[in-house]
Image 1 (tube, rainbow, N blue to C red):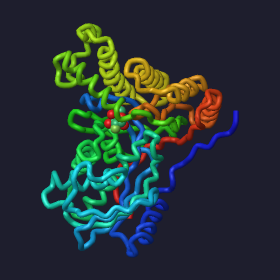
Image 2 (tube, helix red, strand yellow):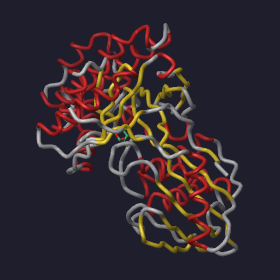
Image 3 (cartoon, rainbow, N blue to C red):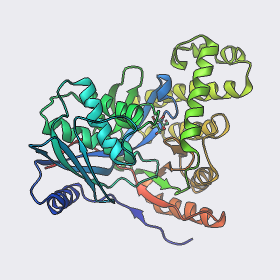
Image 4 (cartoon, rainbow, N blue to C red):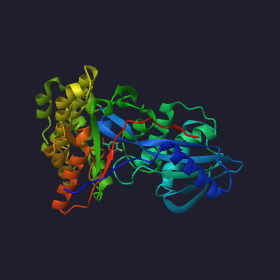
Length: 401
Ligand code: GAF
C-alpha cells in the first residue's frame, strides 16, 4: 500500500496572525482583535442531540478565525479568505432568509444576539473570516464559523455574554436564520470544549462536563478520515430522520426519546407498530445508552484500560447508524470496515452522515498503516481518495490576539 499523509491543522498562532494580516489587507487598518472557534468530531452519541440525548464530542485543532473591528457606522462588512464575495449589510436590518451562503452564519449570529440582548448588534463592524476547518468534511465548519463570530461580536460590543449564551446564539443563528434544523451538538462542542478533554454533553439543558481524553499519552490516536463523499440530499434526509424520531416519541407518549424508560427496551419497541419508526427509535435509545456506558468506562479508568470495550461501543454506534438509522453512505462504511480490518480498536462515522468523516481509535504507531489501508480500500472501490487528520482534543472558542 502507498504512503499517506496525516495532515495537521495550521499552527494556531500563525493562523491568527494570518487572519489579522488578511483583515489589514482587506480593510486598510488594524482590527481590534482576532477570535477563533474549533471544528469538532463527535466521539459517540450521534443523532441524539435533537431528542435531548447525551453526546461526547471534542474540539479538533482545525479552527475558524475571525479578525474584527467595531466601526462608527451602522454597516456590517464581511469578507472571507476562502471566498471572493463581499457582504455589506445594514446592521439594523437583518432578516432570516435574506442572506445566503456562509455570510448567513455570521449575520445570523448578529441577529440572534440582537434577539436575546436588546441593543446588541445595531453597531457597525468589519469582519474578516479565515476558515481553516475543512469544508464539507462533516467536521462542523459552519458551527466553527458561527462560534468564532459570536466570540468576536460579544467582545466588540462588550455584550458580556456567558459561553452558554453564545452557544444558544449560534444555535439560533443556524436554525432560525440560516435555516438548518440541527440540534446543538456542534455549537456546544465548539464553544465549551477544553484542551486534552472530550466534552460530556447533556442536550436536555446543554450542561457539560470535561472528560479526560489524552490519547497521545496512552500511545493511542483518533484517526479522522474525510471520505470526501458528495453530500447528497443532506438537509432533506437529516430533517426526515428528525421527523422519524419525533414520531417515535409521539407513539411512545413521551416529550422526547430521552424521557422513555429504556429498562424494558424491547417492550418499548414492541409498542411501535411502524417497522421503520421502530428502527429509528432503537438507534436513538441504544445510542444514548452507549454514551452512558462509554462515559462510565472513562470514569472508571483510562482509555487504554478499557480500549477494547470502548472500541466495541464505537463499532456498535456505527452499525446502528448504518442499519437502523440509515445515515451512512458506501464511503463511510468502506472507511469503517477498512479501519477495523487494519486493526483499529473501533471505528464509526462521525457527525450527520450522508458523507463527511469517520473516526477510528487506533494504536498511535498504527495510525499511518490504518490510514494506508483505508486509502487502499477507497482505491479498490473506485472512490475519491480520502484525506486524513489526527484529532487532538483542543480548546473551545476564544480570543487569539
Ligand atoms: C449534525 C448536526 F448539526 C448536529 O446537531 C447533530 O444532530 C449531528 O449531525 C448528528 O449527531 O452535525
